[in-house]
Image (cartoon, rainbow, N blue to C red; front, top):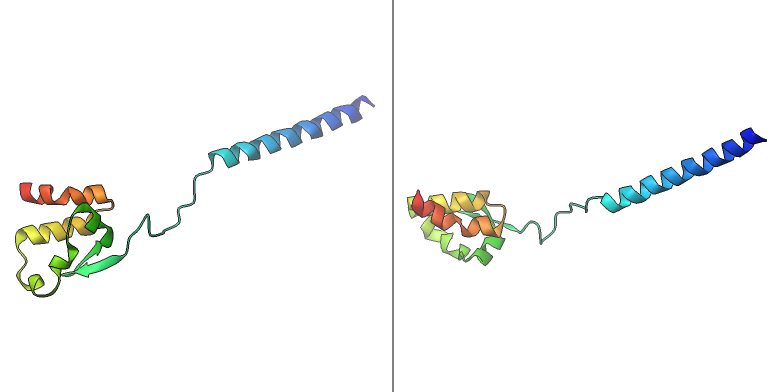
Amino acid sequence: MRYLMALGIAVVLVFFFLWAGSWIAEIVQQPDREINDFTVGRKMDLCGYEVDMRHEAAGYDLDEWKGDRCDRLSELDRCLLACLSRARTIEIGAACYEDCVVK
């Protein structure tokens, strides 16, 4: 009879620890990493550079780099477009102009 009671207690403890472990796993679970319009903007091709359209929020008029301007890009323009194509956040994109002027 003691063995049966010990087995019952062991089963209850195992169930409790598994339940507690799954509860803790739910609490610390990372959020889903879905790609959506808030994490990744639409891309546009500006003179051969793929630039995230959200950089317009950083103060750049992306329509300036369309048409004839692509034929006569200055070094500053090339630096800006290269920086904007690598920039992953709006804050980094906003700093591109100062970085390119320094270079």
